[in-house]
Image (cartoon, rainbow, N blue to C red):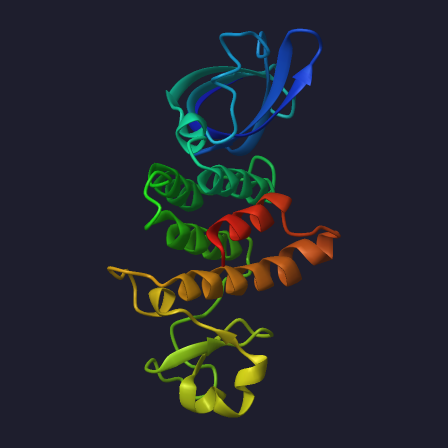
Length: 239
């Protein structure tokens, strides 16, 4: 069997003296691993970096086999992110969360959003909000999407400022007033769409919102914790 696809490097581990096993998030074949012969060579090490976008050809006798990858670099996102610690931590966070997806299960929408975020890692005023939206998309792809379109209590679409930590549904200011101490803030950029400027406290609220549901609905049932890289990311962003 053989197929060709594009993908993003999620992880790389040594195999034998010269090879490596790379895990990719591909457009059409989902999260997929394969052996890269000579993957530890001087030529291949810069290619097999977490976050890099590659063209990959996979070959295997049977579909369920590990198979082998031949990869060609498309864009070196890892090298671009290394200029500052926050984008690098963002890249590592994104890769760690993507590995929660079922193996070999395609998620083309999330793949497109992933490329979009990676393309903006050099723009510090943009990518933190995009990463929050990426985490929301991941929750949706895993079956735990939030409903931020209308109030859970009234059904109205106006004045949404909270999210219920239990239901994952938006709540209006009026309906949530008696319970605001128990509700999560809904930052304006998730409620109203793109904005020219997003305040630091809104970014903090966005990461707190997605972090809560990733932790309680996705990670805790699997006995996992939020990635260490995400904690470093928030400290770098000072949120």
